[in-house]
Amino acid sequence: MAGSAQKYSQALYSSVSEGGQLDEVKSDFDEVIKAVRKTPDFTEFMANPRIAKNKRKETVEQAFSGVVKPLYNLLLILSDRNLLSEIEAVHTHFTEAYNAHYNQEHVVIESVYELSDEEIDSIGKVFIRKTGFSKLLIENKINEKLIGGIRVFIGTKVYDGSLRGQLADLKNQFNERTIS
Image 1 (cartoon, rainbow, N blue to C red):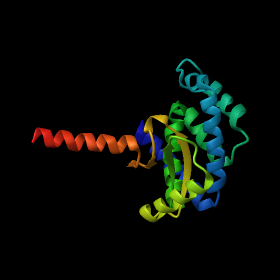
Image 2 (tube, rainbow, N blue to C red; image 1 turned 45 degrees about the vertical axis):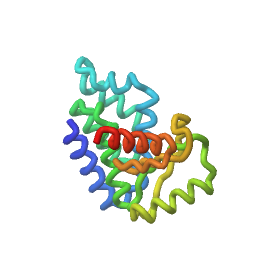
Image 3 (cartoon, rainbow, N blue to C red; image 1 turned 30 degrees about the horizontal axis):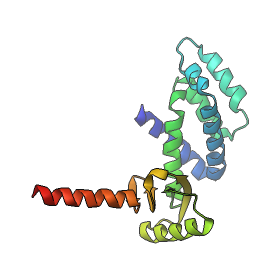
Image 4 (cartoon, rainbow, N blue to C red; image 1 turned 60 degrees about the vertical axis):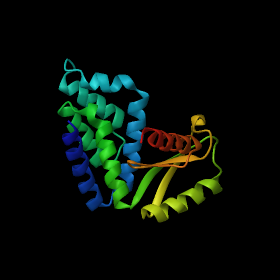
């Protein structure tokens, strides 16, 4: 199924990036995902094999007729092929392509307390230099287990500058010395 999610997201991305609707589709797609997440029964209903194809289509038409046309067509195709359960995976792949297009990445900064805008900007500048991205979309999450410092997640990479991480490194170094 993951391959089909990537295939559908790539088809959507290709059609809208050429048509100049990339930002509009991304915005609407984000809203569709928020709506789907708020209604967990939606995915179950749409994946239920006992629900007739025309009933699924009708539901998509009623729920999403206001979204930009290429996205609406994709939702109808996914509904028709009983693949709407893959909508979040399609969104994830689409977002990756969108971010690559703009040379940007989503970043999560974990800290013990909420960081100020100045602190976030400062950290953002460091990681723009470190990663080469043009823009970082930064989200600050509170994690009191860190004790102090920060932990930064960019894609699949983790930069651990937390006190907890430093203590774990120290413990590992100590264990390696006692074993040798």
